[in-house]
Structure formats: structure tokens, C-alpha cells
Length: 584
Image (cartoon, rainbow, N blue to C red; front, side, top):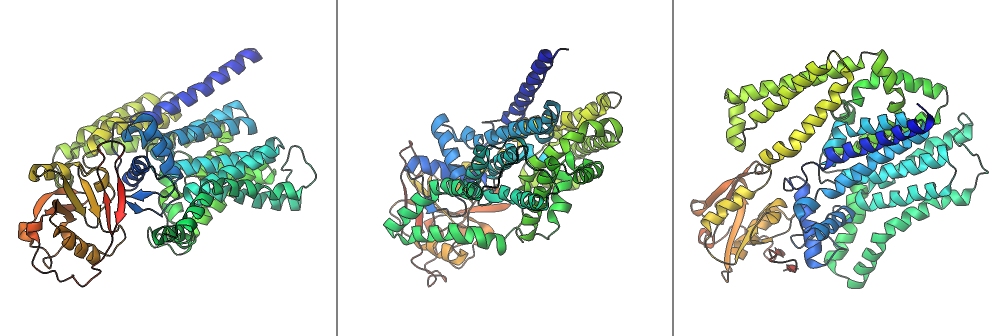
């Protein structure tokens, strides 16, 4: 095969990789609704942006949302305007960011080593459990991981491949976008710590085209990061200062301080031990690379001995990133997703050797066979109505046993098909099958369970009035998103007694048809006659009841508590001109 034919074949392989990634990531788009915990929140905020025309200060149900900067919600809102469908729009930002991440990993691997290494790196990322799951989830992490990967790509390309300051400044600009997406977008800058150390000690030649140290050019990098941050921060600060609105001042202070420094150093939820990522996240969610680590460690050690900066810089950065998130008491498995693209980069050069000379393929085959047999067992046990599975079926109204049987049977078929041939193919075939099944059949099975649509169907069977408004107490955002009625609420983070008290007084204002929707465990007989409550179903691990004005008692024992709590209203859109308001 001549050089031109080999080049065309390699280009074709790259195209196949990206088309495969697009197929796996985009399949199922539009087949499901936003699911908790985060998706309904971001989808609702994006809808409110489009409906109200207020894009600078995100709101959920008319109340300002200061937990995250607005970039991810902007992206959903943009695709909502473009497509006219929130069912499609809410998943597109994560999907497209993940596709870009696959391309960046492929291109970086190709430039640092070879075309085949780039293809291997892209495939390793694509078939990684956590990456595929997040690519199909409307959480911020896939997007911020993409911005962080661009930052790492720019720094590594500048340091190791071509000394063009464009890549250095581009890296910092996307770090800034990462910051206004989810705070931690600055993390690629940690790669400069080992770079500086090895430059000072002269132990590794980190640049292909060494030049005289130019301090001003280096220091200009953060300017580009602050420029990107300023695209949102400066207009926000100006608007807050001009308005002097106490609610906007509270929004500013919350998002700049409590949701950044305080959330990291003194987190109040998702509390996990220091070793959480090493023990509970990486072994399972970083498959298949995680099982290869025992064989990869000697390779990486040799690269350090050989002063191979292509391995040293990403590997050191991965350790720093995992350490950074491990120090914080608040931890979620998705936080360390940005490390995965760099991990596959330093793993890809050794995969071909590991597949041909170690027992790694057999280990992965055993993992596939075990998961397939487990799925078969769950499917048969469910059909046999075993007690513990029957309880789950009755509780959630879900019977996924045929789905488990189908996945298990195909997984066993894949195991048998690959055992005598290319055994290493078992994992990519199985994870692809699993994701296709989950993104189609699984979406259909789970959609009613993951949404409160059954609650509102039951309400519609009970409520016959026109122009109904539902008051929400201690709710989640999906109840706003899926409600066919206008809704009010009494402050998402307000104390429960204050919400109940406000709901009691609001329900007594009988100028229109009003009802209160509340979890039955969060209400007592102090203010409402629970004998007159109407059960409307089970959703999100709670039984919900509907209270009308008739259920109000003459007096409420909580009346002295916060009588003037603010009420927020979201009027259900008939068209895209729906009004949003927050008023006392």
C-alpha cells in the first residue's frame, strides 16, 4: 500500500470514528423528557429565558437561580429557539460538546503520536462508561469537560507540538468559558505547574521549538480567560449596580461567593470521604481504561524515566485534578469527568501492545460476560415475580424484565461470538448495545417513572375548573416544567414551615381556582384537614396530595411564621410570549 492509499485509509477511519460517535451519542434524541435531578431545572430555566426575553439572570418559576452561571442554560435556550422543541433542545448541548471532545482527543493523539494512536484514544473515550452516560445527560459536566479538554488541548499543542501563542491564548479563553459554565473551568492551568517545574529543573525538554522566555506573553494568558469570563460577568455586574434591586444583589453575592469558594471549601451536600473517587467512581465508571491500569502503570513509569513529556504532563495533571476534587468534602462522580479525556490520551499508545501481549482482553471479556449474565438473572427473576423485585415493580410501576433479558441475551451472544476471535471487541460491542438499548427502549420504559406526568394526569381527572393555578410546596423543578397549569411557589430554598404558612394564606385568596400540591409527609393537620386531601399519585419517591380551599382549617398554627413570604409565579405559556413574574 502506497503512502497516499494509507493516508486515505486513515482519514476514512477517522471519519468512521466520528460517525460512530455521532450515532451512539445522538440516538434517542427527542424520545424522552428531562429527568431529575438537574435536567428539568435547566430545561425550565431555558424555557423561561426564551419566554421572558431575560437571558442575563436565569430564573426558575420566576425566582432567580444563582447556583450556576448561565452558559449551559443559554445553549439549551438557543437550541430551543432553533428547534422549537425542548425535548430535543435540552440534550443537544451535552451531545455536541461530547462529539467535539471525541474529535479533540483523536486529533491530539494523532498529533502527539500517530493516526492509529489518535483513533485508539478517540475510541477509548467513546466507549468509556462515564463519558457515554454524560453525553446523553443534560447536566453541565459534559460541556465543562469539553471546555477543559480544549484548554488542555491548546496548552499541550503549544508546549509539545508547535510554539504558536494562538494555542496558548485559545486555551485560556476556553478556560474562561469553562468558568462561566461551571466555575472549575480554570483547571487546565494546573498543567503549567509540572511544566514550570520541569523547565526549571531541565529534566525534560518540553518544547519542540525552544524560545527565549517571554514573561509578558505568558502573563497575557489570564487576560484572555478574564475576557471570556467578562462576556457574562461584566454585563451582570453592571445591571445589578444600575438596578440596586435587592434580589439581584443577593443573586450576585450568592453566585460569586457561596456557589464558588464556599461550595468547594465548606460544601453542604454530596459529602463523601477523601478516597471516594478512587474506590467508588473510577473502577466502574472509567471502564474499560480502569481495568487496564495494572498494565499501564509500568508503561507510564517508563515514560517518566524516559522524560516523555507527552505522558508526564497529562498524567501529572490528572493526579492534580483528582486531588483537587478529593480535597473538597462535597463530591459527585461526574466532577472528575474532565480527567477522562487526558487519561485515554496517555493510555492509547500502549493499547495495541496490551491487547496482543497481556490478559487484559480476557479480563474485559469476563466483565462483559458477568454483566450479561447479571442482566439475564435480573430479567428471569423479575418475570418469576421474586419478592424483592416485585416490590420494586409495584413501587415504581415499572416492569423492565424483558429489557434486561434482551440486553443479557445479546451480551451473552457477543461473548460467545468474540471468545474465539478478537476477544477485545467484546467491550465496545457490549457498551454500544447497552447504550442503544438504553437510549431507545430504556427511555420509553423510564419516562413516566422519571417525570411527574402521572401526577398531573390524575389532577386533571379531579380538577374541572378553568384557569387553575397550582401552588407548589417543597417541590422540584420538574413540577413546574410538566405542569399544564400556571404555578406559584414560595421560594425554592425557603424553610418548610414558611412555605406551608404562605400556601395556607395564598389558598385562602379565592379570586380564582387554586390548589396546593404537596408531599403528604411534609404536611400536618395544623393548617389543613387532611381528610379532605385528594391523593394524586406517587412520583420521585413521594406520595403527593392535592389540597383545595375547602381543606383549609379556620386557623393555622403557623400563621405567626413569615406571614409575608414572597410568592413566585410562572404563568403557563400558551405561546412563546408567556409572562414571568416574581412578586410579593
